[in-house]
Picture 1: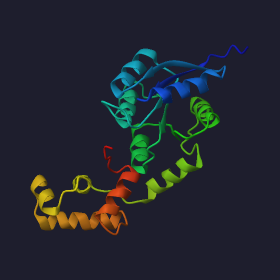
Picture 2 (picture 1 turned 135 degrees about the vertical axis):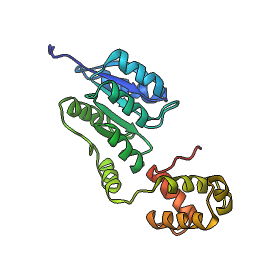
Picture 3 (picture 1 turned 90 degrees about the horizontal axis):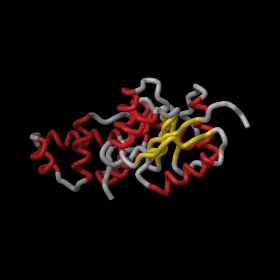
Picture 4 (picture 1 turned 180 degrees about the vertical axis):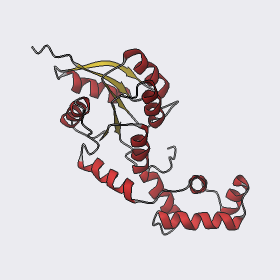
Length: 213
């Protein structure tokens, strides 16, 4: 048996079955150890501070604090923290925000055990592994080329997703109806959408806005 220390991993996901699956994958490898688990953002930050794992796997969609907030908080605790994002959401805007917050790599939840283990080993070995799978590589390429929305455009888009009309949006934001129409026009242009419904669908897919289901 090797005397090399094991790679200690913190698992952060609000679904017990996901954590159980990851634990099973890692415990089958002699060079890994699951240091701990967390089911929400606040637990994740506390667990990282207490356990100081070699690497953390963090879901983007978490209760209390989302994954991007967790990544940023952990990096404040430990600027050298190694964090791998594991997500089924996969919106490029979410990917970009997590990257900016300090994530080292991304994996979709459909990734194989081999991909998960390989990515963790590369990250702990000092490599970046952003394009761990072709699907993630495609997301990252799109995230770097599509124009972003301004904060005001994002607000308008969120109200569109809620089904509000221009006048209602104008009242909520203290704008004129004409100004709201300009924002909507720019949103459609940036998202290459034919109408408001398509714009909302594209924005949700890209992670620009989140809609509770």
